[in-house]
Figure (cartoon, rainbow, N blue to C red):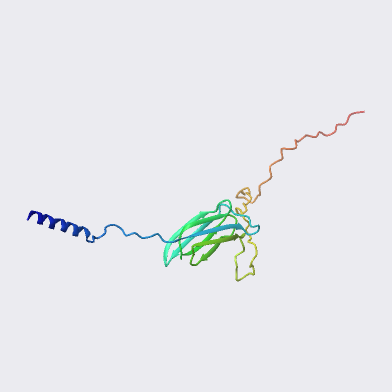
Length: 183
């Protein structure tokens, strides 16, 4: 009976090893397909590339907010990104010093997208009270500061205005009356 028990024991181990065991750990989830987006930023008046412009991507996919990502343009004016999922809706915003902000909504991004943005100088805001469509802005590019008031001397409490100080530039000379000499 010894060898029969051993044979049964070996048969039991073999059948146990062949049985399916539950898997532990995480299931493998493949990475989503990503799109490659290239944005070229140029000046609107001469078509030259704009380095160091900020390009902001805000992606949403099926109602899920994927956050915002900002990329600066290279010396050729190009900004590229390849972390946005295919099928996302992307809000694109381009910000550059001295130019009006550019914004565009891109619906359902494919595997590859190439966009060219022409930046314009700031324009006058559109108003229903004035006809100012396509007029340049009143404010010019650069730092805008209000004019500084000229400092005026403080008046004393009395009614007398301040008298101007005597001028020290011309020396005062005493004039003597002519003397008559006896003849």
